[in-house]
Image (cartoon, rainbow, N blue to C red; front, side, top):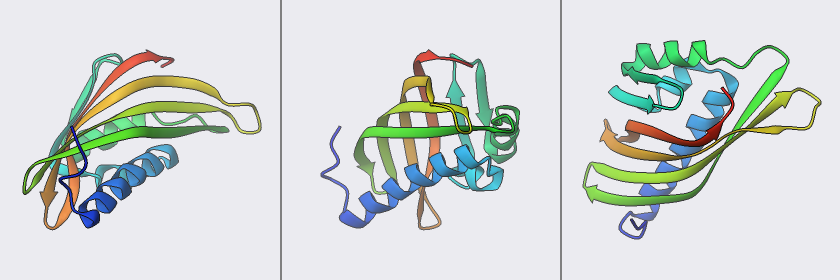
Length: 140
C-alpha cells in the first residue's frame, strides 16, 4: 500500500480519524467512538472473541471493555499505511500498541497488534467501515 495517491487534505482527515478513534476509545466516549464508524460498520477482534456491527453494538462492546476506575489506557498507532482504492474507499493498516495501568504507576503494555481497515467517504467525511484487529499479544 502507499499513501501517495491521497490528497493532502484526505491524508490529514484520515490521520485525524485515527486520532479521534484512539482518544474516544481511551476516554470511554461511546458516542465519539461510534461516530468514527459508518452506520453499518464492523469491528472484529478474533483474539478477544468479539465482532460488533453498527453503532449500538460498537457502543455496547466499548462499554463492556471500559477501563476500570482509577486506571488508564492509551492506544498508539504507528506506521499508518493508506491506499485510495476508489474515490470513496481507502484501505489502511497500522500497528497498534495499547499501554495502561493504575493512575500514578508505570504503564505496562496491554496489547500489540495490527489493524486492517476499510474507510468509506460518508456524507463528506472519512469513517471506518470495517476494522479488523490482528493481535500479536495481549492481556485482556
